[in-house]
Length: 492
Image 1 (cartoon, rainbow, N blue to C red):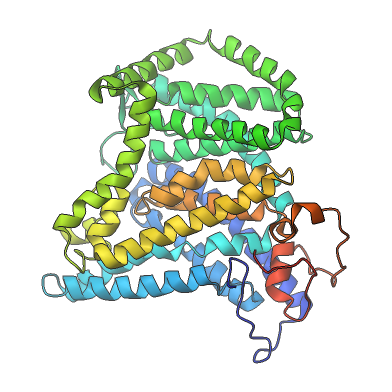
Image 2: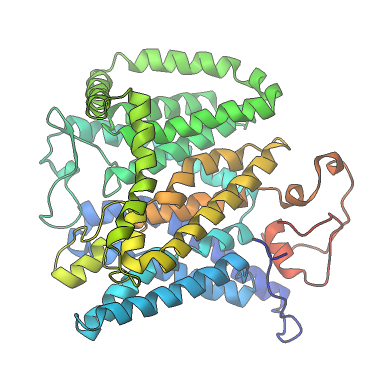
């Protein structure tokens, strides 16, 4: 059965690279992944503050990095020719061809190629990274990323508080580009502070990632200093309080809610939470005296109340209905969607810029609606089904890891599954976080646990050949075509 870790065996036709060369290539891929992560966090700062005149080209600043990763992955033979990547490639080619056919009678061919190419870039280009990253990173690498993410929350929280306190017209609150408007308003003359990101959506994803890594650190008693967890936790609470964003509360809330499932499956972990609950209560009590936190909390409460009034339901029901509406709205556009759609890329801001000269939502702001309107009911549903399938697969593997006590994949999955399912891929930050959350959820796994039954957990493993450099166990399985571990099925 072809699964996530399944690779076409071509060793009979191709000469395998030398061990030293493969190790160097793997190290270079790892460096590029760290560069991808850094650009994901700081590309907004470049677009807003450092080089705003290059805001438009910086939208695709991570694309060359992704392409270079693919080239090196092919060289190191860790590029995943699995069912997911092959089917994604087929959908991409057909969607691109359909977009060209649909747009050609109405738009100059050069513009057609630019629009559809941007559509391919937005929907498909970065998604194979979900499988390449776990081929070269392992659980320890993910923990290292988590440590830096937690540390980064401290300046992030300070920056968000400063942005909230500043006027909407101040330099610290400028939008990306030169003279391209302002940040979203939270009410009361305040903006929704995005931190270093271009817009608040980046801060939403980052704060949920911090929550995931911190909860894992607490449950597994990682050797982090208590002052670091307390300070980063306080910064997380401040960031949520001043965010003015209900999505931020929902995203972090989903991660915290996954803790209940974890404790249900692994109740023994509950004993590790005691002193950290007290520490969290103390930190919350201290920051409640900060004027900026109290003001932000008041504005956030008003936004929840307004949302509940507008939907004639409770705050919780309002959030649930808003989330479900993102899925059901897509089905309602089918009555006005032609078979071939309106053209791949037309619904993205970048595609609109090529078509009408400025960024806007020409088709729909909702992601599922955009995909169906762009590609039509057949190819659109095929791509949405692909996103559902990979989300389900990663979630299933994360739950399996939980049965062995590995909580990190589930925490990361809970932080990122909405981005995979309905995140707006036309927005580069959302696309980047969807890819990273999916990839790190897989990289944080112990692949042996995906195959072995729980009762076989204590059985000794057959020793394999020496690993190359810093290559993960997952990468070893992609390469060792002549070696087979005795773990049963190949369901990875």
